[in-house]
Image (cartoon, one colour):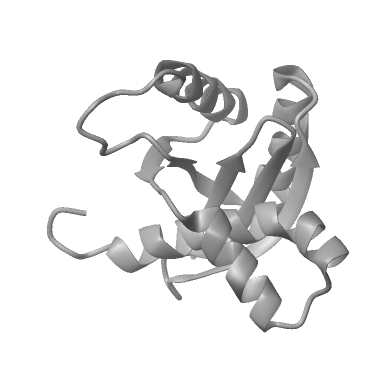
Length: 141
């Protein structure tokens, strides 16, 4: 069963989600502190090995926009470096409202504010991954 990891990259936190191309279901996995590329790569290598992942999907707020915004190249380069560091192919996935959607889902599930803050990054990664998994097999995806 092909396993896919997804990341929601933030300046302080990195949300991680896992899903399957077979079941086409994604779930939040963990949230990592953004403490430098080398440490993040080591943490992601461990997760890739544990999950037996074969693809990395990264949410990109600026992908698919008509005009490239400041920071796009930096995000793209960072995502590419992470993918190379863990030895996985990379898919950049346009996302605009993943964090907001994740917050809404956590609120609906009854999580308190303090719990939502901890879980929202991984939940946002799961939103991005779920959208990617649902797009598989659709023309133009």
